[in-house]
Image (cartoon, rainbow over all chains, first blue to last red; front, side, top):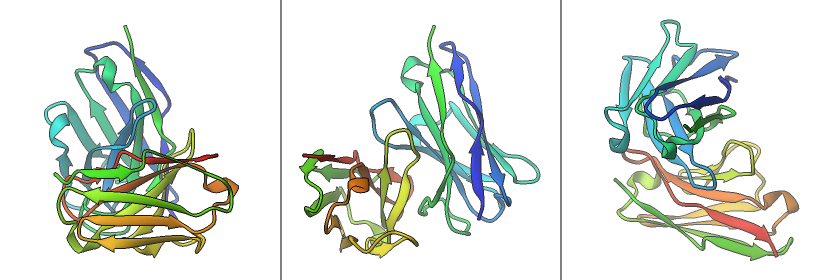
Length: 122
Length: 108
């Protein structure tokens, strides 16, 4: 079974960008959609968007449109989340997650990465 | 988008007691595509239930889910010490995916 391994914690200045990676260990990400979900300190879960590697189609939650880009590498072993125009309220743990094989983002999230803490501070 | 409202916000119970968690949707969830997750501090969420009432592999049968349309329930029949955590519902019937605000089950 594929495991998801994310990159390490980041500290960023307001206005800058961050790129978080999510690597598939023990397989690839080619058969399932990948979602990114974030969790601000002490808060709930917020879906940011996702990508369907087959067809390389990305879809984003409206509140992140224009600030977020989700991509995969050519071998579909690693997915990336890039968030620009960082603000203090973007401080959160960012999770990648995937579900059963299929070509839809409307799915359950059965496999999660360990999370990446992004801290935005001047 | 579908807004999910979970209640109560916090449930204070003792081990061995029954926990009943509610998740209400702002509009009908397509095909009962409603999932439940458990999250413990410092950990990623863990998928418990999908399709409103199907348990994921390895989830004990003290966990059960029910509901359809706009009203869903997660029941833990007898709380074990490892069940004290935060629980989230999620709908995946339509885009965007949305989560409820969570219910914290704490030890009384």
